[in-house]
Length: 257
Length: 257
Image 1: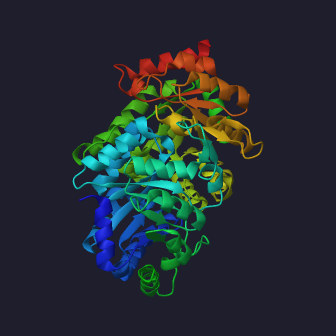
Image 2: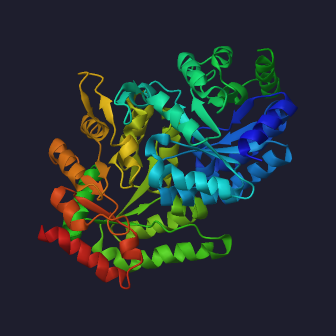
Image 3: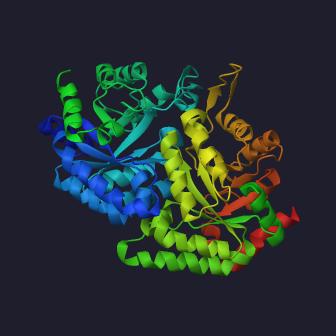
């Protein structure tokens, strides 16, 4: 069973397509133990209303992947959820493989990577490492990020190396995701028009994950309407007065589509 | 004093422009303690012949940045060298800032980032975090990586958003490095023609760091001749029968230029 099939099943069973992002800001050394308990408490509170948890360097750097983070992954799995590492991997192949081996050993079910690095000696060893892992892991590719500067890279116009025609970088990335059989693409909720363009290109063969809801200005309704299959939500849930209620509300949105 | 000035001074004092890359492959849990002693032994052996040490996820993931890696950074500093984190940072601004704050707290003197993320809400908070740190830290930008797949991204043709003219991605990145006053750019030793193009564009205002010597097929002589100011060397030194002698030889190459 692939990661893509697993998360699809969990989303159906739990009636939620919300991925909780545990993106806490920098904490001084003296407050660092709080980070782990904060993460654990929020997962306890919202786990009935989400399908996966996304972890990034906000937690791996202060807690360590074989220390605090592994405890979080165990909690995530015990709650019947999946754990995604938002590493935005973009190194040479041998390094990508090493990175993936450590993250997968720590228990992550999927890893986010940047297709900008290309296939040969880039993404290829990463996909191979994910596929040969027991259980098989997933690779999710960035297609268009949620911040303003994304227009400089993801939004730039490039010359298609095959046809010579001008095209958009994010469309080329979505095409790579299809060709490489990626388990998902990330498109910011802040750019619903681009979600829709990519959705039509992918034709539901590769699901779209959208961060940037709330704090960054994207609305969940627009992202879902445009074609996002999973909403990645951090501050909007974590900083809510009642995180569980907020997660439930967001999960329900999708079902009403 | 900026990071760029500091490394320049150390390179002159030590008569070496070699950056040691501690890129060890994945190690199983039972061999992990070896990683730290391996790293420490190699630094002890070669520190007279290098100017800096580059660390990547090969060590941060298994050892943790506030555990084993911080010990390595202390050793690097005690030897009068600088420590570069090859994080290839490519996230949204708030995350980049958090990443930088943790790496800088651990003691890293410079951080490598991918200019593909753009300036607003991307690189800007990263540069600001580096500049306001005490002591000031450096940001080095990727311009062309050393692996084959780099041609898909770094080597692609893009439309310049200002002039509308077609140009190369790596030249646009080098121009950003100049505009943002980066402390360096990374250009693979495997593409000496591109090193030279970028060298002429940067006009020695931003130094070029070149990985990919040896195992990946680049030759140090060609990279230096094309304009690289620093050679990033891993396997070629680590796996040598006599790492110190190998580092000394490579350092001498540059002086003979």
